[in-house]
Image (cartoon, rainbow, N blue to C red):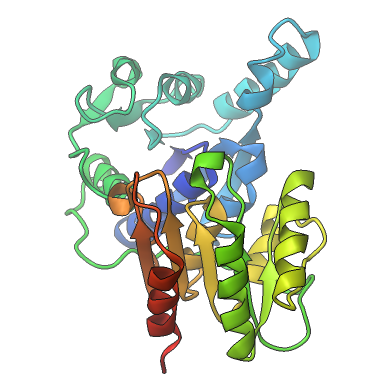
Length: 316
């Protein structure tokens, strides 16, 4: 069987979908799995040895340049690749109208959520096969249950196996280190800078160099201020795969509700997730190591609360 998984964004959502690969391969050992994903996040499924081919797309870019001829040429090339995949089934784990429409470009049967389960009910209109999955479950569990329903095996009851293998080598500080992830896509997610300095200082007392990650120019400025205040280190600009290598070597990760925090947990690192404007229940930090989530919408955690939870994670 040849299967295409559609989970295009965002980074955390893509990470949460990766356990379906091992689930499916365990019940269908001969399956060949490809993955359609937004180009910036292509490194995530590429880190899974069970994914045969990753098809990157640039819909976030294309939708703002629909009057550009180059955009239509790029979309045509992707459509040709999708049609050439000769898939037996397409599994849309995204549940959005855009993901459903791209899934339909393959010409293969498309399976997804029913109207009551999909994030956008109209997406169910594009599916030939539909399944009901409760919306009040963690994102990882929703993906696993949808795959089980459409691939004909019992709902998994074991812990999710993300199966990701970070690339080896690349940038790393000398000696043991911990990672701080103080930046996020929205200001509402941010946690006070002085609190990050306190966390970094505690990690330094533990004997670990605080490594403060960043992705954009304005984020680099914040990262450098925090690192300077706690005797930490700031890496150069790193791509997703390079960032994964840094996360995989960390003794401890403390981060906001961002894709890299979820990736760190999936890679098995002790990870503490700080939530300032979103409830962690449906997308809390999940992984095989020591993981914890704190805060929520309108419940910005205090420095003392985070440090207390951190102490518990760092305990022998």
